[in-house]
Amino acid sequence: MSIRDIIEGKRQWRAQLARVKALPPDYRIVYQEMQKYLFKVGPVDLLDGRLLTGIVDFFEEGAASGRGVLDLIGTDVAAFCDDLIKDSRTYADIYQDSVKG
Figure (cartoon, rainbow, N blue to C red):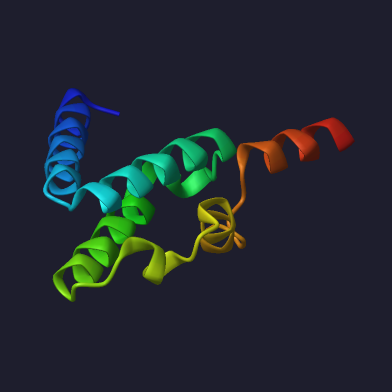
């Protein structure tokens, strides 16, 4: 990874945070909880940024249509996140594979 890649990644991350800050408060809170959960669970492809960007896109559309965030995702945020990453490998999966040998 070059310095340019790092700088570009940081620029994209800041742009993403600005989009999140522009969301209504309830959407922001749920997004932050989803982000914490996903960072803890650790899907391998989380680092490419598409998953979190897709969530922001989805939330922006929901907010623009006047729907509440829980109307979009339901009341169980963790279950919604699990459904999003159900086909993704996690770091726990990689660890399990390495232990099995």
